[in-house]
Image (cartoon, rainbow, N blue to C red; front, side, top):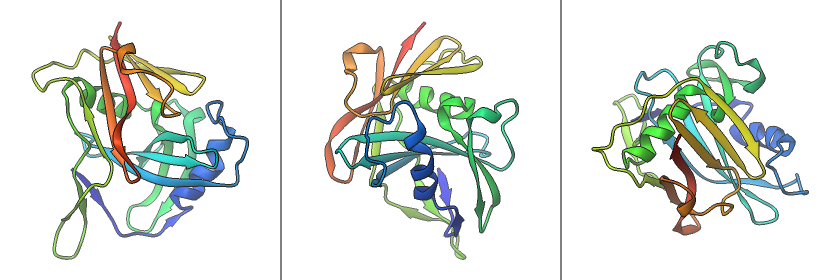
Length: 211
C-alpha cells in the first residue's frame, strides 16, 4: 500500500513537472504554458523506502504524457544526472526527486506489476486515527499472471527514443510510453494498461520484452 500524508510541498508537484518536462526530448508540444495533471498511480516499494508515483499529464495539444517520479529520503548513489530537484515535505522533510526511469526501485516495481498481472498500489491517507483508505481514480493492470516469476533484474540503464523510454535491466527490456498512443500491445510480450479520469477506455502505458 501507499501511505499518503496531508502535507505542504515546496515546490509543488505541478511546479516540478512544469519546470522539468519542457526540457525533455520526448516532450513533443511547442506550447509550454499549459500542463495539467489528469491522473496518477503508485507502485509499492517492498522495502518501504522509496515513494513511486507516475503522473499522467495533459498538454495543450491534447497529448497525454506519462511521467514516473521516485521520492527518496536521501540521494540515489551514483546517479546525480537523473535528479530532477529536491522538495521540502512538511511531514517527511527533504525529499530527492528522480526521473523514475533511472531508479532501480521503479524499474523493479514496473516489471513486477506487468509480469505478475498486478494493479496499482492501494492508497491510504495518514490521519490521527490511523490510515484511511482512499479510492483510486487511476487504475492500471499488467497482463501477466501472479504465477509467473519475475526474471532476474540487473543494473538499470535507459535511453529515450522519440516519445518512449527504453529501460534495460538484466533479462528484461521495459518500454515506457512517455507519450500515450505511440506503441501497440502487439509490440511486447506483456503490457501495462490503465484508465484515468476523462479516459475510460484502457490505454497502453508500458510493455516488456524478455532479452
